[in-house]
Image 1 (spheres, rainbow, N blue to C red):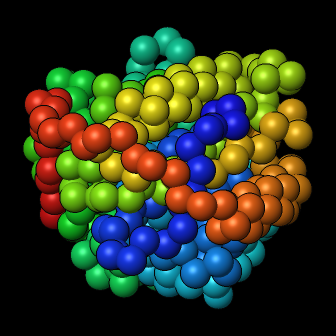
Image 2: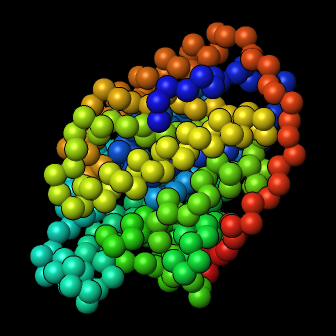
Length: 306
């Protein structure tokens, strides 16, 4: 997401129900880790968190320990990840997927192992801060927001990039990556009652580095689609809620499948976000447009992962 004109205002006298919104982007989710560190240090905390794909994973982790120490632990986990941990390439599984014998080319066993090892709770409702996971119903294409039930299946569903990872069955639905649905986490956050939305975008750090393989191309296309729609909705909902968009990181050309620059991305995002928050705190609050009535969109469903 390009630099936004929407700036953080002074903390209002009346507390605004605040949501952190985290988008997808595979390995570029490391950017959000640096942003979360800066937000926690600045004392900007959420009343609830909502995310899609890797953003859901980051949101779920921090919701279990929503403080500076939690953000630092998340950075440590990210720094230890390698591409093979999340995208284990198996030529046999890939061939089955290509020739129509499987509905995916990569197993989600590696990601499941990472989640089970590191997530600090078992069920979504056990998080210290409410967390909502955006997924997509494979049959209808509609967004399904999971707010309770087993956490790992919900996160596997939200990260199930169609054709790359297998769909995940939750209840009676086959669910895939939340970025596929025509319903971004911003809209869902406002429907859940957010008056202030803090958006943690991943930006476009890969634009100077076109993907060189099929996996990179799939991740590239989905992440760019989600970010462009997120940017449009951040502007569209300014009259409904106080929208805060942290600055993105454009200094590195990193593919969404590349985990080798994780620490660099975290550091750059942390420094950029700290500068943004400090500058915003020194500015007088900008007047908000007259509020518009929010009409609930028909293409989202709330569900439990039970």
